[in-house]
Length: 250
Image (cartoon, rainbow, N blue to C red; front, side, top):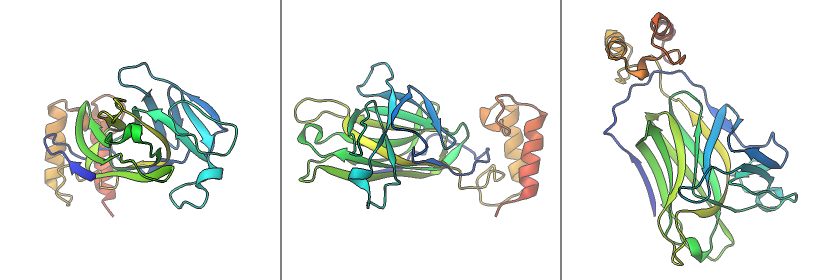
């Protein structure tokens, strides 16, 4: 079962200019990448194989011997949650959660993943979530089902609602009592802003009301008014917004 939802209870304006950031993890030699690492403008962190444990090492592994010919795979590497191999076979590793961000607002993200189709994880719910603070504002999900092939491919994608970071996370209990995780590897993570940053009120037009919406956010000390992304609300945010407005929207 596949579910894609926007959660509308957290209002948000588009305030930051961001080009598409993406990675296939192919610049790395196979091996451990650390508990946090950066690739393609995206920072990855909070890697957990089991709920509530301390973060573990991410790893890159060469999967050309398993996925070459699959159009969703970009040779040569995928990323997983803590093990790697010196060969070219895909390494499916237990994953409960990881988080990724560009450090700017985005309104679209996608992740390719392949997962072991064994029965121990049948029924686990797998999510890609867009977060603002700790609030989930948009998500895509599927339910892991046991199948005959050794592995299955899935694409998780979220869009249409601005968010600060994405979270891959599993929830539920498999038939053997195993909890909150699947055996998976990941490729082609994309995080991007597709909407116009200067359209602050989100009505699809650049008008005086965008200036008023920005000023109201600034006066309320809303962090969304940090238009230049320096962590402070200053006159430079007004200048950055003015420049984006003057540049217009394509």
